[in-house]
Image 1: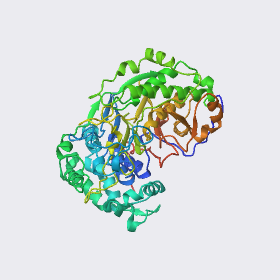
Image 2: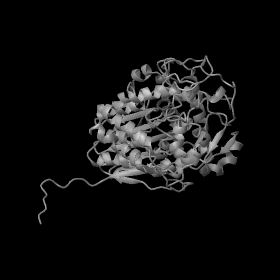
Image 3: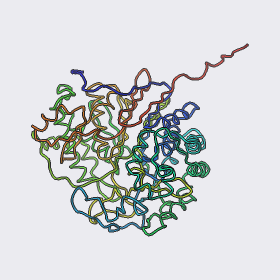
Image 4: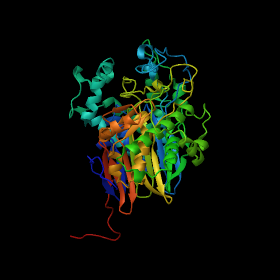
Length: 550
């Protein structure tokens, strides 16, 4: 480091030689570690952790949701499981009535039909993707992998302050549905930290999944219960049993790019992170960031401009590759980065921004095992508590992924049957000399991939530890204004002098977690922006032939 860091880490890392699990809830990390401890691999641990998070982080993720999982195999291959939710077959581009053509209400519709209730639900993919990934690469029986989730649903867990604060934010909507209110607003009052949350119906649903796998939802009894609930009342959803049975998680090829001797590996479209993290790093490779210094207005101005250009290109060319032609090769090329550098401005200026939306409410896990398998995965039910109701008798909270589509007909993000919405999810893995150097990701919607990019810079250009890299302050812009976390607030006036409209915000994106790889083993880190917890496994079995006699 050429200068002191402008922050102090609030959490501590942990190192293990037999595996590391990092999630945004202690029980999620414990579930993954339990799988490693009994001989499971990183996929067993990741799927167990994600299923457990559907119980203990129910506002963020569920089996009726979607996401992206990036898997590196011990032999060095990469595959990306696209489990993103998609529009139902009966969906139409004019199914909602937009209330405005301009910000801030561009995405809003009459009656909030695309945000809350049955009409906001898209065809889910999480459970299908998790089961497919486990069937192909897991080592333990699926019944063992799902057991921690069932245990915490049936026996209960202690509510965190994080969960309770999110219940309070949406208590008015949750109170409208007796099923979800019964769990999170018992007796009409908001749960308090430390109170026990028991989800007996969801435990029963998970036991059915343990027996039948993804078929329980994608064509089975849980799917029928979901469809029946969506057909109830006046404002009906469009997801059908045919949609559920026909949903397929896609296995996609990862995108590879390079930065200062490292291979940067990320997901392809519909995820935009693999493309635009590569694009931004390509632009920055021409600059000596170390000489600028981590804590400098000069570097922050450059980052703001690079992020702005990436968002301009993301708006121009992103989407579901089944519906939109995306020039991946050109966008991630070094020659195109040279062209992009010509678009950077010496003086920033707020500009007009085409509206876009993604939910901030997501979860991320990073897992590795002793054999070299890595899982970096980001999953969600979209908004906090998804569509904000619960399917009776199942404990399932459906997603509200339809809110991510442009409710206006005739645009690239307009609704079409089977379409998957572009996502900023960035489950990244970085290699050095062909070997894993670090893996990371985070929640946070449009702020995800620029934040992931900044942590990659922290690790490569500034030699930070994993803990420092995930906890470091962040900057973000989509072009209209520039956001700074408090750790960068002392540069606000200097950036304003360079033409930027500055806003100081409590945090940019959510709880990042990461694993770094070195000669001492695997070191996990989780940041202050969520309940992130590291579980690292060391030790091992007794030496062969050792016996004890009394």
